[in-house]
Amino acid sequence: MVELGLFLTSNVLYPNTKLPIFVSEESHRTLIEHSLKKDSQFGAVLLKNCKTTDRNPEPYDVGTVARIVGMQKWHRSSVQVVLQGVRRFKVLHLDYSQPYLKANVEWLEESFISKEPGVEERLKREVEGSFRNYLEMLESYGISPPKEEVHYYPPEEYSYVVADLVQIEPHMKQQLLAIPTTAERLKTELEFLARLLDGWHS
Image 1 (tube, rainbow, N blue to C red):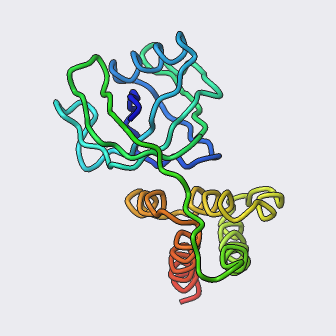
Image 2 (spheres, rainbow, N blue to C red):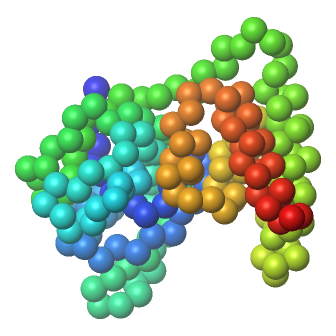
Image 3 (cartoon, rainbow, N blue to C red):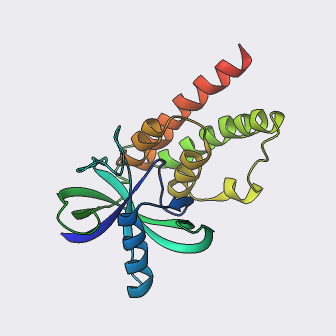
């Protein structure tokens, strides 16, 4: 087990992706200050249907280790911080007794166990076709697509890029984060993309 400070977010951070956040609550400011002072990492976890100011806020049990890669002062009491995801973890125990929320966690390793050789590469190609169509849809609404290079990422990293960029509800993004295998995550993304594209065409 490893102990991590937890930053409770309103969106999901994935490994190898970035997430800008605003830091205003005192507990979160303390966590960020400690992380910068100690050059340490912490966990980013999606908050369930409650507020960070609640006495015992409840996060989801799967999150992503984060490191700070950018910071900008916004107001006197608020700072914008850019987080980069490192690896996934599962929360085992929450500790509310500290100045900021802490947790004992265990690392979650990506599982590539599959009876079908090359299944991740095949699914990645299928997702890429749908994802390109989805990005064309976003572009028609004036949203710039990501750089072409993202389509050449290996399956695991690509599955997180798609999860990060697809516009779905946070609880659905959390579902993708918690999926244990790349193949299963890609399959679920195919389903999500099919629904989004069907809704656009109808």
